[in-house]
Length: 324
Image 1 (tube, one colour):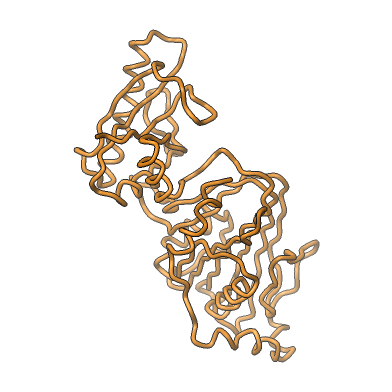
Image 2: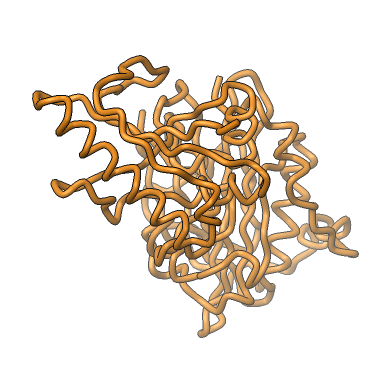
């Protein structure tokens, strides 16, 4: 069971659901649309199909479609934010399953808000569990949603016209849904739906939920940080993601931690201790650069002297250890 599944109830309370005063009438109104409005939407591309768990917005056509079996997929559960010079989701989780990606173009007789309300109403009626949502500028950079999250440049548009939501089915073997809606500068409206039908949990987590990280730290006194990578000079690479760690430390400004570097290689112990300390110091530098008080994080390097851990690869890692 993943952190996401175990903490579904807590996540449901993270973000308030947005309610539109006429949302309850939207589905009924769509049923009465004249044929001419439906005709404004493009025809589906060849080979495309709706996912059986999600009903499309009626005045829409599929302009992008892709399916992949047994892939690792990042489910974004937070807004885009800049941390240590990089834009990254506030947090996300990496899950494994069969992925369906569908991009709809919507008739311009409607607004992005109409589309958003339609899907929110549908998900709630089906009993799906909300995980996260954001609207407008609260979602962060549309450029990063389009190009970094979805790798689909037609989804880029003015930030005030974007919507994002993520849900799961709440079943024992859940499916996860993410939906991004944007109205571009040319007034074209797109809704990008991703559905992950879960096959099995992945041990790899990108941007763990900061609240879950804090709970684990306070319960177990230590956690190994995911998604940290080092170059030959023992410096963090651009692929590293300290955003969730910063968010975790900001959740409780009273805790102090050791940042402990571990490194197991075919080298003398003294060299490995020095290198692991250098790695830990680099992490502390990045944390302080992101606004964490330097008095709260102390770097320690133990090299190969503490090989036991609860993750798959123990040869090199950075752990956060709670200080008394």
